[in-house]
Amino acid sequence: MPCKPLPKRALAPLLVLALVLCLSGTGWAHRPLFPGPRAAAPESAASIADPAKSHVIYAELTAETPHTWFALKNDQPREVAIQIGIPEEPRKQVAEPVVVLFGPGLPEPPGELPVAPPQGAGAGALTVTPSGRPERFNEPVTGTRSRIVVDTRARLPSAGTYYGVLYDARGEGGKAWVSIGQREGFSWRDLTRLPGWIRDDRGFHEVSGWPAWAWISAATLLAVVSLVAGWLLRRRA
Image (cartoon, rainbow, N blue to C red; front, side, top):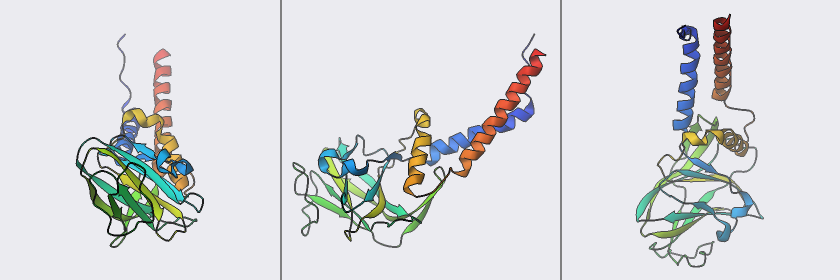
């Protein structure tokens, strides 16, 4: 007996679910990193193996941990995209963020820096500070909002390890994030990690619950399962 095709009313939920998953995979290109207090020193910096791939580091700076460090394993001279942002409406204090890059081939800083270079990184440094008007940024996959205070590119002139440090210019602490790279680093293999990433991202932005698309996906998936189950039961009858 030939297998009957799924009824047409089951196709619409399937298409909606596929569309939502595709938008989820392409709309969130940054691979999130939540290093926490363990990245307070260069020796325990959050490691980025490929600075061309897009990563975002979330940091909550405090009096006990005023710095968040990250290390870029650079294999060739390149330009990297750098964005710095702060949560749009946090209940806690936001930072006035500054990033300093240390590494081979960078110029001597024009003055004394508030952060010492890591051992072996050399004396060259590049300071990235906010300039211009902040840009609002809505992240549809996580359902969070930020203000981007820096959107620039930095030249890494040599192969080698570059260290970056994020800190608050006022020395008071607060929340901020920094993204490095532009090429999408998210893949379908990361779908199992997506719920945890969304939970941690929303926690950082102090947003409760889940984004609207997650509820739509769950309802759509439930509808698809119900329709397929009903179709199978009718075929067996």
